[in-house]
Length: 573
Image (cartoon, rainbow, N blue to C red; front, side, top):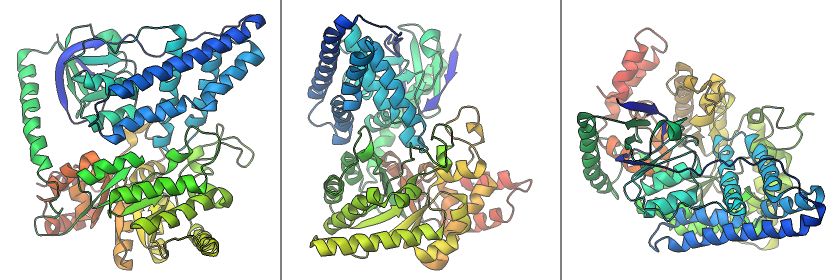
C-alpha cells in the first residue's frame, strides 16, 4: 500500500532512496538543580561542552572540499561565531552561578529567552533566523549529554528522515552522498532550506509525524517541487519518477547554457533579472549566473546574534566587500528592516503585533543615531561600485522627506570629515504597505525607483500571516485586490519615468511571470536559483500579446470568468 505525505517542497529536485531515520532531534531538557558546592565543576563541564561542540563544528568545516561555494561555508562560520557569543556562552554560566541550575537547564532557559526575541520579529525571514540559535544550542546540548554523532554512518544514496536538520548536518550529509531529506519541522526560508537549494538537494520540510510513519530502509520518493513524499510505491509510480529524474539532468545542462544570454521576450523586449542576496558570500552565485544586478541586499544579518550595534566601520567594510566582489554589477542595499523588541506605546513587542509596530524605516527614523552609521557606510561603499539605497516599509511621504534630510546630514558630515563618499545615490522605496501602493503616484515623484515587496504586501492586504498554518491558505498572490495594487504601482512608475521592480517571492515564480510581464513589469528580483528558469520562460513569451490579454483581464477583476481568463495568461494558452 502506497503512503503519501505532504509538506513544503523547498527544491525542484526529485530523488528515490532508502529511508534513514535520524533519531537525533529536539532534545527533552528537564529542570534540574545542583548542589552549590558543585557549581564550579558544573561551569567547567559547560565550558568543556561548548569547546567540544566548537571543535566538532571546526572539524566539519575542515572536511568541506576546498571548491565548495563560499556562501555554503558561511553557514558553518556563522555557527562558529555564535559559539563565541556571550549570549550563548556567558549568560548560561551566570545562571548556573546564580541559581545553581544544571548546565543543560541553564542553556535551555537562555535558548527560550533568545527564541522569544526572534518570535516577536515581524519579518518572516528574520523570524526563521531563530533556527540558528536552536541548532547551535542543540550542538552544545549534544556535547553536554554525550550523545552519539551520526556523521560517520554510510549515507550514500539514502533519504534522511529527521525532526529537523542543522546546516552543518546538511553540508556533511551532502558530501556523504545523501539523495534527499525530509523533516517534520522547518520552513522554506530557514538556513537549512536555503542550503538545500544551494546544494541542489531534493527536500521536503514540515511533514508532521514522518519519522514515526515510515520505517528504516523503506524505499521513499521525494518530490521537492510538489512537496510530496511517497513510500511503498509500485513499479509504475517509481518508473514515472525515475523518468523525471533522468529528464532533470538534461534540463540542468540546458538551463546553464542560458548563462550570459540577454533576457528578452520573443519580440526583443528587454527584461532585467536581478538577484536577492542575504550574505556577503552570495556574490559568487550572482556572478556565476551573470545576474543583471542585485535587486535586494538584506543587511539585517549584521545585527543578528549580538548584543552591541555594528559600528560604521563594520558596515562599511561589509558593504565594500560585496560591492567590490560584484565587480561592477549594480547593487540595491536595503536599509535595516528589524522590529523593535522594546516597549511601544505602553506594550511590549510580545503583546503587540510587531508587524504593525516600530520596525524598518519607522525604527530608523526614531533612532537616527543607530541609523546614521549605516547611511554613512553605504555612501562610502558606493565609491567602489554602483549602489542604490532602498527603504523598507514606507507608508508616508513624510518618511521619505525626513530620510532625505538624514542622507544630506550624512553627506555633510562625511565631507567635513574629509571621507570619500558617492553623491547622488539613487533612492528607492519598497512598496509593501497597501497605503504606499495606493499612493504610488505620489511616491514615484519623490523617489528614483520603486520595488514591490509582495511578501508583505499580500499579507497586509489580506490580513493574514503567511507563515501561520491556520490561515496561510488565504495567501493568494492572484487575489483581485493584490493585482490592482501591483498594477497601480507599475503604472505609477511608468508615468513618472522611473524603474519599478518586484523583489518578493512572486517575482521568481514561473506561474506569475507571464502575468507580470503583461502588466508591464520589466525588472524582477529573485533568489539566484530561479534566475535561469525565469530567463528560459521569458525567451518564450510574447509581451505584446500578454499585454493585450492582461488589459482585458484587469477590466474583469472579480467577474465570473476572471479565473478562467487568468489561467489562460499564466499558462500562456
